[in-house]
Length: 288
Image (cartoon, rainbow, N blue to C red; front, top):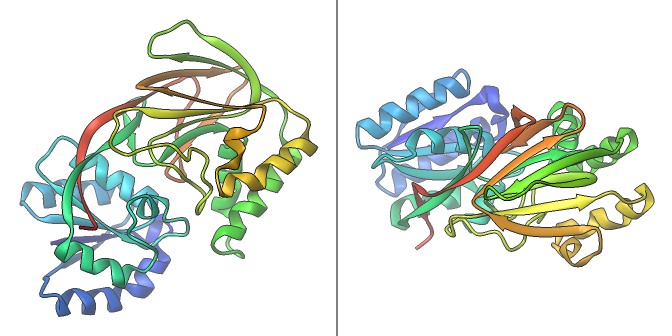
């Protein structure tokens, strides 16, 4: 087993819990070689080497690290293990792994292996949600905040992003269809249901259906958006006017002004971009 930790990618929690995790793995009879990587590129190289050696490749960190490792295992016989060690841990939540990395070690020993989908933005893989608009701006702000932890950092970032947000017009084409134009706050393409530490932006998204849930939040007064925002934590926003959920394998998105696409907590591309689902792309160890 290869245990990959990337301190440079915000996995400070993983480093702090590393001793406990190694002890838990020993108790389960699992030997693990730990690699502390310098950056995500180093993590990708390590993951590829582990897959080539036939090792269970475990990403111990946040969604950014998990997405990087999953991308390298895509289309190989390698198996991805997940230990939550980031701030949001949304992919671990989607897999019902929980937030405790020590408890999650049991899944590495006794779990089952299934093939799950990945997303891609212009060929770059992600495991969770790719988004552009106000939520991407909130993600950028959250990445800079160090004085808050957990869910509050994302709530703070959302308010800060709203304060400076100005309207954008998106052109969206699904599965090669005719583009439609929407003026609004955000477009998200979801492989998993949540981001930002449990914000259920796409409550119906599944990791094994070969499609992405496309969530479009149209233009509305900021006061109304403020009332809408808290409902994202339980997925209630999808039943409100101004929010539309579609499904597609391929989404082409452009915008009226420069916008960055964020996925798994990190910037991944600039608009215009093509986002697609890659069905059954990676084998993942999940609870039995």
